[in-house]
Length: 231
Length: 248
Ligand SMILES: Nc1ncnc2c1ncn2[C@@H]1O[C@H](COP(=O)(O)OP(=O)(O)O)[C@@H](O)[C@H]1O
Ligand SMILES: [Mg+2]
Image (cartoon, rainbow over all chains, first blue to last red; front, side):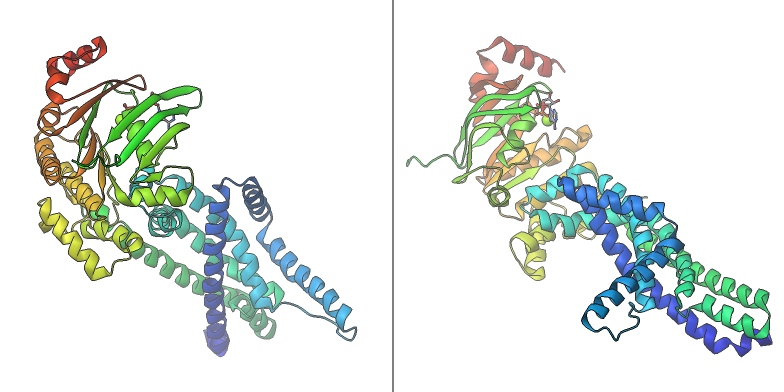
């Protein structure tokens, strides 16, 4: 226990890093999911093609690999552009935190695309026609009706994506983001207690995923209160 | 009496679903304040016809004029028309996740740019008019079918439409709830609303309709005032249909 306490500040800081990573990725996940699902359901063949490419690529590649490709790929590109302007520059990269957030969001965003698409398709056409018949524009119908009905249908699947997202935040230590896994690696290289250190990480993840599960229960309760009311 | 142009006018309208010819050469004029009842066997094109009037379906040939606008595939024109044309569906289609009053205020705020207070005011007035103000804070699923359909009528009326379309508004209801909805519709007719009602409620048709339109296989077979329509239908197909629904 003493070994953990010695590193408590670092573990705490690391926890905040992954929480921040989680929320920033989440915003991106929702964005990719909405864009992807809308594109897949659109009439435009090009949009559908791009969205299909996105989901095939990001669901078919190991997350770990995608993370490395995004980080090093962007660094190589940025460095070569920078050197064309100023040959003195040695190395330039996107901050690892942002590269990590982006890479994770692509993977989970690809899964969210499929979940959102299915949920959009699950909306009864009658509600959409009723809104149209009231003179609402397509844009208004999308934001005021399709999205609120879609996210309710997507909720159970989306809860699973949130758990995956949380767990994927562990990966970013590989590009040097100082999350809790990074802390554990550093600590165990000093105190030679890898088991205790990694167990601590596991407990922190377990605690955070419990928070997510409980939160999702509450959100579902709110989202489906109109069904409860009918009983 | 001045001769105003009809508020709804369909001229030589055709509609296809793929190869299927769903509407064949439909001609129908509706003057302001008139009440039209449309009847006919299932699959005869009644829904398709009134859905073409507010552009929920696009017609393929002919012209449809509503309130001075010519219906086209242009969404702006479609919206312009739909803002003035209310519609009530067989399956109510109340937004299930929104409370009754919110069902009534959403489009007012989006389409008519009303403030929240104005929209709620109008909403409550309309709920009172259809006799369910007490249910304003409930969810649709907590209401009976008849109550839900009355909310749906109130929701359409909130937009202050010039025309109301009804597509079999009582067909999904238990028998004991039909009259509460027909009463609201009858009152609306008395207040001078222009209405096209697809319904098989012949009592309602007799007392409210200015004209009855009988459709079969995508065509308007016969149009007539209620007395002549029921007493002396001109076509054998009309007679066969009336025999069938009256014997049931
Ligand atoms: N979206 C559609 N796609 C294909 N066929 C349709 C569609 N809507 C209606 N139809 C067909 O058009 C015909 C008329 O339908 P409808 O207008 O709903 O009839 P009614 O309301 O008189 O029962 C029916 O044969 C129906 O199967
Ligand atoms: Mg029908």
